[in-house]
Image (cartoon, rainbow, N blue to C red; front, side, top):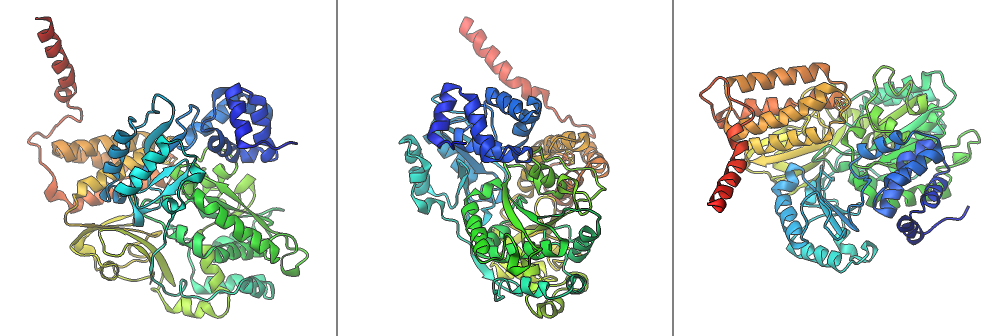
Length: 603
Ligand code: SF4
C-alpha cells in the first residue's frame, strides 16, 4: 500500500478525506489494535489534532466503538480532538522549573504571542499551556514545542522562539542549539565508572546455566531502581516460572516523577547497556519481544535509541539467532507515551502498551504472571536493566555487594535539582546521608529536601542525617533541594496541583480526594488554618491512603502531611474552629463590583 507524506495527510485533513488518513495511519502500524496509542500519537504529530470524524473512521476501520478511541484521546495530555495551533507550546510547571522562572516564561510568551493560556490563538497559529515536569529540572525553565524539548530558556532564546513562531518557520528548520539537552554527570561510582564491552554480559549469560545467573543476581541483592525496590532476581524468576508459551520484557522509560532525569542521561549515554540488560533478561525468560516505553516528553531521544537498536541488530546482538544461538530471537520496539504520569505505574504502562487508557490494573495478578496481553511480563526501570548488564559482565557482583547497606546493595543514580551550585547527575553508594549529598552538590542554607518526588519524603534540616536506602529514605532518583528563601507551602501547593492533574480519575477517593486536597491546602495556605481544617485534611488523607486503587492516590498526601509537620510555625491560625473552604464574600466580590459599576453607569 502507498505511504503518504505529511503534506498529503495534511491536505487530506483539509479535504476531510478521513478514509485516506485512517488507512494511511493503520497501514503504518500494520492494522494492529495494540498500536492504537501509537497511531493516535502519529496522527497528532502529523495533523496537530484528531478530529471526531477521523475518530469515527478509525473506529469503523478497526471495528471498535468510537467511545474507545475518544476515551484514549481524552486520557492523554498530548492528544487533542480540536486543532490547538500550528505551534503547540507546553511549559514545564514542576516546582523546580517555577523556581527557575517558569511562570515568568509563561507570562512573557503569552504576552509576546498574544495568547491566553490554555486557549488557541484566534488565527489558529499558536497555543500555550502548562504541563507536568518534562524531565529538565537541571536545566530549566523548559518547554516542549510540538513535542520537542527546549531547555535553559532565557530572554534571548525566548525572543528567538517567538520570532520563529511569528515567521511560521517549520520546526525542522529551527536552530539545533535551541534543542540541545546536556547531561552533567558530577559524580560517578560503581556503575557510571564501569567499562562496557558490547555483548560481553550476554555472552556470559549464554555460557552459564540460567539458574546460576539468577542466583548471581539474587546474591548481589540488586533491587529495582524505579522506587519500589522489588528484588530483581525474584521478579525474573517468577516470570520465568509462570506457565506460558510467550513472555515479554518491558523497559519502563516513562520517567515522570517530578525532579527526575537520570533515565534521560542513561538512555543518551548508556543505551547499549540498557538494551543489553533487556536482551539478557529475554534470554533468561525465553522472551522474543521487548518494548521500551519512552515517555512522550523524551521524543527527542527516539532517534538515538533507534540508532542503537539498529546498530545492535547489525552486530547480531538483537534480532534473529542472537550471537549464533539458533533458538534465541529477540527484538525491541519503542512505544511512546503521550503525557500521562500514571503510565509509570507498571500495570498502567502495560495497558498503555496495549493501546488503551493507562488505568492501573487490579493486582493480583501481577504482571510477572499476567502482563502484556495476559502473558508473563518483566517490567523494569531503565537503571535496573543497565545495572544488570554491568553486574553480569565479570566479577562485578563482588564490587556491587561491597557497597551500600545491609538491605540496599550497590549504588543509586540521583537526579539533583533546585537550590544547589551543581545540579545534575550523581551516583552514590546506597546509605549516603542527605547531608553528604547536599555537600557534594554545593547546596547551602538548605531548608528542605524532597526525595523521591512529590510522593516521596519531605525532609527538614533536622532529618539531614538520615540516609538514602530502601530501609530509610527510599528514592527512585528525584532529589529536589529548597533553601531557606523558599516557602514550604508553595512547594506543597505545587505537589497538590500535580496530583490533582495527574490522577487518572478511575477511583473516587483519588479523583475527588486530590481535588479536595488541592482546594483545602490552597485555603489553608492563603486564608489560614482552623483546627477543623487540619482534621479534615487528615481524614481525607487517611481515606485516600486506605481506599485508593493504586499508589498514586495512596501517596498523594504524603508531602502535605510531612510538609505541615515541618512547617507548623508558618501556618496562619484561624480563630474559629470552623472556617469555610469556600469564601462566599470573595466569590461574590466580582459581581458586586460589576453591579456597582452598572448602577453608576445608569445614574
Ligand atoms: Fe487512578 Fe488515582 Fe485511582 Fe490510581 S488512585 S487508579 S491514579 S484515580
